[in-house]
Image 1 (cartoon, one colour):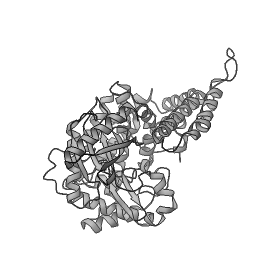
Image 2 (image 1 turned 120 degrees about the vertical axis):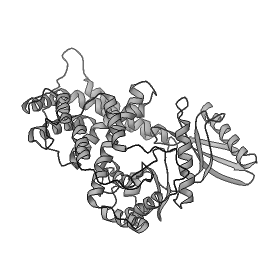
Image 3 (image 1 turned 90 degrees about the vertical axis):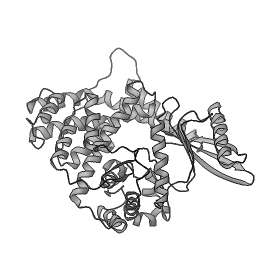
Image 4 (image 1 turned 30 degrees about the horizontal axis):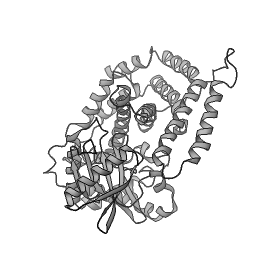
Length: 452
């Protein structure tokens, strides 16, 4: 093991020994994939003849938020008391020698969290038939959780909060302004506050052949309108390329049927749609916020930096869910090979490097190197972005500027400002076309597979 995993093993062992009163040996400490904001590790433990796997969640060392970790621990306890399937909390703390940050330690819950496997693998075929309905029932259980011990949770108005974060970037975006305006104009009556998970979706749910085994990652939990969780589950980003509107596996009707079974309440489709629009805008702003942690120097991270290029995915999804997306033709490729430099050209070099990394390097990594494989895939995605931007970025930029000028705007900032002050209408043909042209141009470079 490395110095880091040695330290974590010692820290986990000390925590477990303190909790159980028995000597605990710890080994096979591994970093798990995913989790851009927190680290997740697994470890094998032994106490006498008892062996088991535990899971450690911790803040990145040096960037701890103990209040939020304490709140997550409180949510796990309260949700467990309400019968929600959650990992058993073994210990939590602001710090421990060897762990070096606020942490949670839980039992391992068996199940699959990788969304694409749940959506596609044959072993989950039966579970998929009832999973949307089951997710509705589990959300109903979460929303019936007693909140008396959760007074520390945020209960600010979520739309005000998202708008304030967006304005703090000082990066006006026409799609965001159109979304904010629609949300203000169409907001449904607020339901009584409940415990809101805040990130309930495939990826944060453990599933086996029988259904949901555990609900993970409570760091965004707060008190608010419970329908927020249902709308978040319908956001296109969480379909992971599939067509079905609920997590890529089921219908909105099934989701609401399950929720009604658990709560006796059935939200309207209009209410669900409002929260789906909100969730799409929320993920857009959160993506930009995650990237800012790297760009602003708070935390050096390949994962966080890469999320910055995903903001345009949510811009596209926002225009789509609002019915404001226009089809825009691609600009012709404008790059030409340099007359100064020898071949291979820059794009050829990038292609060769990507091909080698994807084949010889990624293919040679053993399965236990899951973290390394995950990071390498991020690198490959970023290399693809660079290659596509070199190939066509300047041509698309010229088309976008011409589209904006034709609609009477000097640029995206001007259009965003006019949408904010009400002098431009999102439904206007020229505005729709200009917004769509800019978003689609960004998406063709960042992730063309996201285009419908």
